[in-house]
Image (tube, rainbow, N blue to C red; front, side):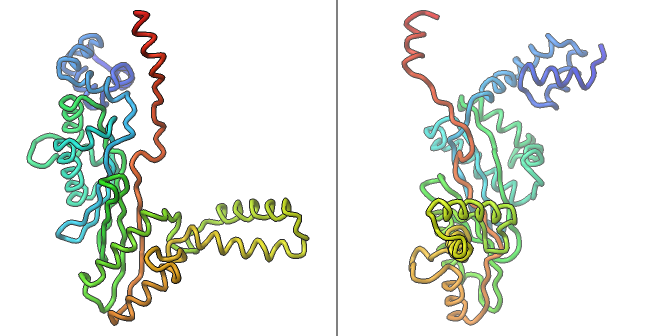
Length: 304
């Protein structure tokens, strides 16, 4: 019996299993939808899909730089913090980071199709396998990869936050700027800057901030003729709080990050510039499930 792309989509919606596995199931069962569901359950894929519907907001963020200088930061989520400490889970995260460093996938979808180290399977296959073995939903959420220049990584609180910093260095050995890079990465972890510098602040963000500040000044009853000057001063404060190079350096808050970089570059006899950075915080932006324990207990007692 023939089947269409709509049949594949329908099977995917019914089971939550990936498109390629659904297509294979329909091929193996000659397009029989019920038989295809059984096929997926027999393969353990439907069970994995059931777990995949659960909220995964825990896990770990790993940031590292490999022997070739390629920097990677990746977030892999699990349902509980307990699983994130599991050695099998940690090995999976490290192997995924190695694939990203070596293969340079365009995005997570591309990453999932790539071969998992030491096997004939894909990263997606291994992810499903870990779901079944560990018993929780596990998913690779996002990653960033830096190649070229000097890259420095930093992991805070055992994987709660991961930071990757890219530096451009002239006239200085790369190993001499690693300490500076680590300090900058710690700054990013602690202060969570939104932008690298003022040039990166987009016009809409700046305009929105100005509107908010103008409203504040009006609420304070300041005269209109001085409002613009007050707002300009507060915009500078906005830059100092939100732009990395303008922030007060956490280890010596009397100087900015940029001034500290300039001082280190002068001392080492060369030039150093931050070109980019990324900061991942575990679970940020994921709506965590809030279970009502009392209701759950009452449900169990009531036998419903």
